[in-house]
Length: 333
Image (cartoon, rainbow, N blue to C red; front, side, top):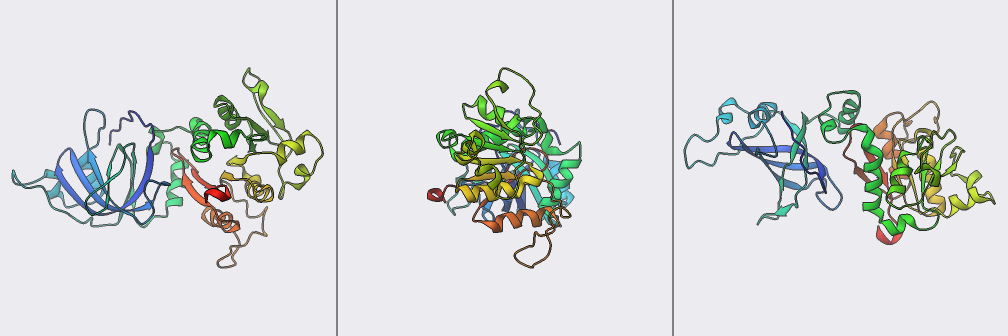
């Protein structure tokens, strides 16, 4: 299908499981659905919604293609049979999950069900597929539909904007600022610096290119292990930067993912990490809380981190591992 992105200010990305479909004409289709992956303060998991999909000059959506992807009977693609007929609700012949973007305010109807104006359809998937497996396929597929919205090279900026939106500029700027753990080339730290937020890169092998922007970037060229006690207990500038941080952030920090959480718990500051590699052979001690099995899969690793402390889950709008596990300050939970 053809998609024109237009303006995505305040965009929200949602997965919904389709329950019924109503086709009004070739440019207008409505979905009655249940949210299976929502957005904080916008639409919660399990919440019913109505998705209004219209094709116009700004948004190009192939309604007939959507009908085919949802495996509806072919007779519905022709639209209403009578002039005054408004179409009828039809159930998909197979379970389907639709991934889409909206940048509009969600208004409830008289029944309290939120009506969502769709900006663009990003994918239609088998309703029995695991959403984490869908994310993994997106990461390894060049033609991933989400890539038309945000490419990988924008993900650090997107994460930085999310951090500001979630925690606020003043909170992130307090103390010594954000700890950017395993940030490699410093892209996240530089994005935060561009927003006026102090950030310190913690990475044993920093690869920050020299520029006028990077001159103000603080760097701790050491790995973060365990709960970070070896760095936190130092009586020098390194220890001071660690102890006084406002938040701990990690964009795919690999081995340092769990230490990000453990250090945040030690310092009693919020954390936000996007898990990526599980590395079960390197961390055989990780055991799932619910069944006692070793942590070997991505979904199990995410749950393992969630079980360590009360935390939340969000999703960022870019291709690949976009699940963010994060905590809020105690007075905001």
